[in-house]
Image 1 (cartoon, rainbow, N blue to C red):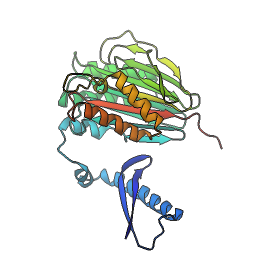
Image 2 (cartoon, one colour):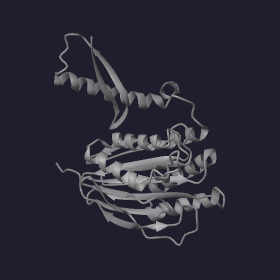
Image 3 (tube, rainbow, N blue to C red):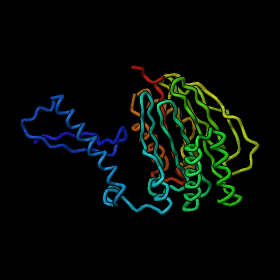
Image 4 (cartoon, rainbow, N blue to C red):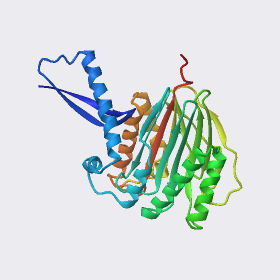
Amino acid sequence: QQRLWVPLLDGVERLGVLDVRLPEDSDVRDIGLWQQCEWLSRLIGHLVVATDQYGDAIDVTRRQQSRTTAAELVWMLLPPLTAGIDRFVLAGMLEPTYEVGGDAFDYALSETTVELAIFDAMGHGLNAGLLTAATLAAYRNARREGHDLQGQVGAIDTTITTNCGENAFVTGILCELDLATGRLRYVNAGHPRPLVLRSGKVVSALVGGHRTPLGVVSDGVDAAEEFLEPGDWLVLHTDGITEARDAAGRFFGSARLVELLEREVTSAHPLPETVRRVTRAVLDHQRGVLQDDATILLARWDGSPMTP
């Protein structure tokens, strides 16, 4: 009996691997056979995601250890870790998977615009998870009500100051990308600077749009602007990536992150695989035990959408 291993897909998100067992006389070089397996993979992947909303069996099977209440809350609110539309794709990951509390990201894709955000709430555990949940809810509500970046930031500020205590705050970056022109507008609320990779090299760290963390009184700031070129990568991450410490107390650091990203981009790995490799490198640096949440979100714009 012959076997094929096919990525289990829901859209562009890889959920796992499908083990297809074939009769001995099957021709594994047959393109039609591969197409049938890929079609079956996408159908099963869609059914897995749909079924997961109505019971616990799939999630229980997927888990390798117990998850904290804070992590359960955050994972319930996250969008799919990988998504894509015509000539744009993104992928992200949170660690530690079973204990994450304060980090999160979100996005909204349309035919003309992509909106992205990454957040890092103060503290740890359930309190951080609750603060993150309130931030995500405020961001999504403002976005869906049609508010621009300043309106989204204002909505998050109001939600935190009104409901989460006077000392609560969240760092974050909110972005808006025009898919026709590559114009990127962004606000940085006390967060590590985004990076732009072009032709396999980090060409800039986006330094504009700075304001105080979300939930802290601010005079406001105009969104900064940058123009991406086709093929550019945008990198958003929390400080748990660069500030991960090894046994000797040495940071993972920005230079190591840049070197790793440039190597992976040059190797032409897809975004989800690059995310996995960066996450693995950070975990290895701390011998598998992170002292803080570490989150990364990668996005690639390949130019304006193709016209018929």
